[in-house]
Length: 338
Image: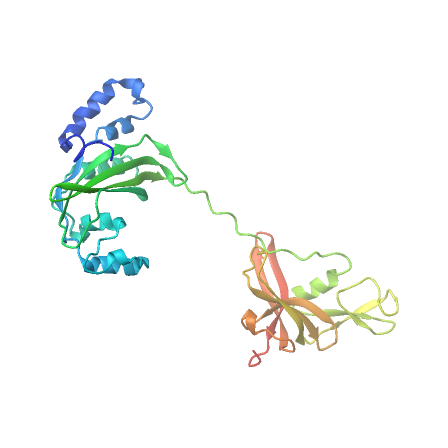
């Protein structure tokens, strides 16, 4: 184990020495980067200060807590059960936790350090990692005591979360005065980064409207489902085309569909995702009562309830975004048929 303040190293200092040490650091000026980061110099003065002295574990090492830990972790190692059981080494910190009531041995040094960071705008905190060193196994009946020291405070660091300082504490755990393990715990105390403004809401894709299909979309905007009809042979067609695919005639008029139809085929869209659409959703090939087929969304039932032959009826949905109003035809499952 590395030497340092507390057991196994130098004696922890009381928090009153922080101001004196800060002054000494400040005298070094630019050589320590004080001019660039005066707060960092003040924080460095807390290194080596005690955060807890002669703390006592709330409970002796005991079989009940060991069992609960192993059950939560799914650890079935036989070494943690029976008359010669030991505690899982990674439980080291658990025996020092003070719960909601805390510990009597806590000093003001750590609270002062965190308070200074809070005042500077470092109002958020995240635990980053911990390190543990084990000297001997703990066994039921062991009564732990511990000392905690502020081991290090980093220089100012910028992360994706924000800018702040990493603070590391070291807790030395003893049983009967003998060192049994060391627990280092590191947090990042930081000022949250400015969040980017939310991305603009994606726009719903617009249908491609041209001179061949403009009449269809004009009808949709009026909540009418129009089908092209050849004026020579009377054949209905969809999608709209310049000429009849049955006789080749270029003359046509329109017939308004009743809107009733059945699901002729369908797919369920999972991937890739498209803006404004929330997969999974059903896209159907609907055969209208007039005989032509049209592709659109099938709504009114969960996507996994859509079936071939399901009766549907057209429904006109209105959408609005930065580009203005958009009306689209979808097909809703006839009530009671889903």
